[in-house]
Amino acid sequence: MAVTLRGRLATSQFGAMEAKSNRELQARNYLEKHRIMELLTYLTSALLFSRPALKTLGLCTADEVLKDDGHGITCEKFMLEVNKKTQEIWSAF
Image (cartoon, rainbow, N blue to C red; front, side, top):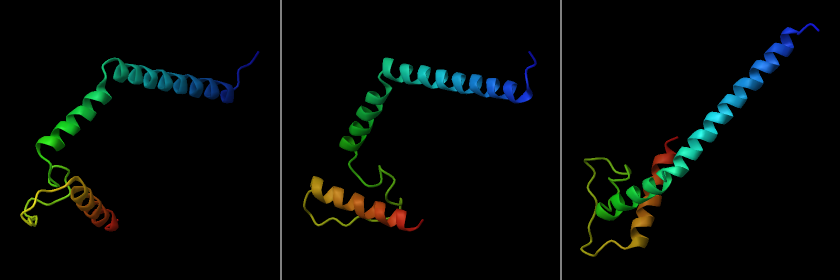
């Protein structure tokens, strides 16, 4: 039987997709085995706990002065500021 060029390309593309799928599966298994996502979640939480500022999240410029009303920053107040700054950034796009 003669193998057509189209048949060879289809076989080649299938092999490439299968290899990509295999690499993705290997990567996913590695991340799960070594609990990388849990580590990233922990590190992010620790960073925000230790340095709970908008600058840590990249939502403020280095020269921007944050207003302090003399009271502690509540979780609600922090979330409102994060949402406000995020909206400002996204509105530029």
